[in-house]
Image (cartoon, rainbow, N blue to C red):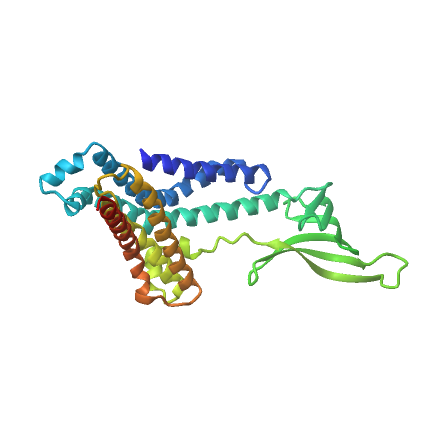
Length: 339
């Protein structure tokens, strides 16, 4: 239940973001649900370890409240036995997490990137309309085409006005076509047979130029190229770049964190007389925040080209050490209070 609640909250936030982007025209409305479903895989990978960790703390807190932990301790059961009890479920969750993190999530991110690129291209095509003004470059460019060719790929009798501050440029041409620079992935409108006018008529800076071809930049192509997060795991393993290693380590850390947080949860949830049944949850929040922030720091350091001691594997010791330290301090304080 906790897993689905956390997953639903995260998904609802992203759904709201996509709705806002659709309302402003950044995304087509028909794509909101698809992108949200694709993002659900990434949220599930994050929610699994967190939900299981706090579920353990809640269960052990309930046992402590009802003194079931005391009865179990009297039977000779300790924290190690608790860990063995939760381990089968932790292993199942870790395997599901590994399948999502290593395979499903990269595929979903790649598909999402391609859908966004397709949406951008579709929006660009819709801009080609005859007999109306089109605003480009956040309003700096104003383009007008008197007519379109039969195939809709060429604008005829084109007029463009460019304003930035006090400067002004006017361009008129017989026709214009779309053009993409494959090297820089920059979108242009290639204008053919026309004139360019700079400045205002009557001023000394005014000039007129005639051209056969003139490229006017209108933006960047929405890249569908794979980022590290969208690259298949097998390709990451064969890459020598630190960024690829950082992504691979991050993917492997997710299922490992399930086992690590299970051990930390057992330590934090141990019975202590006089302690609130659910006080361990507060400490658990601190342990979780520190743990996940440390993993983010390790990832960032690799992306920036810095090698980390023991390849960053030491970070998985941190939550267990923090949990043990917090438990020790509480027991030490409790012992002093009784004395």
